[in-house]
Length: 195
Image 1 (tube, rainbow, N blue to C red):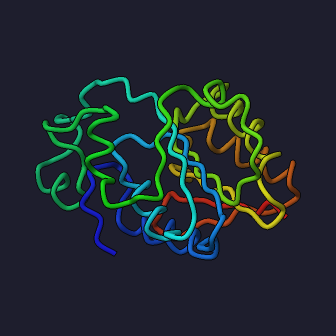
Image 2 (cartoon, helix red, strand yellow; image 1 turned 90 degrees about the vertical axis):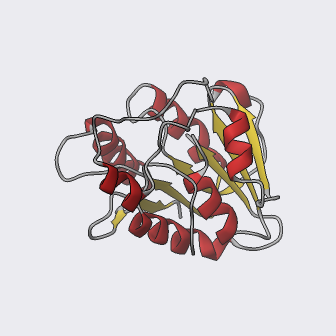
């Protein structure tokens, strides 16, 4: 699947994300994504579950996301990293996911913005602050809402301690759910089944 939305998640990671979401493509399925930014992962999830609904929650603060000093032009082109035209706004997100009618954006800080959420969900994708207490707050809020057949997916799990709170949260989930995390060679996407 071709995904031209700018972002930091790479193609092989999008392939893993897409395959993890495919089993949830049925009428009435609900996915929640925390940390949608420009919509690169949102687009992938929505295309994997066109019969379902995806709720994308982000602050969309309006800041530019270009990181010119971090990547060469070749890397930026190869991986579709955000350029100077990219801003973290709801309007830019909506433009990027315009052909995904199953996406509902929610602007605000999760879980506070959805504190009254009661619907059970099928899949949960976490790619937000990469630090606690924010990520742990989302995990503790959303895990009880995931159906027994559901899945938690995340991004940016590395062998080193680049994001130590993500590694800590994965260990926390493994203990809480008595499940082992699934990882993908050459990718930082991870997943864990709820049931």
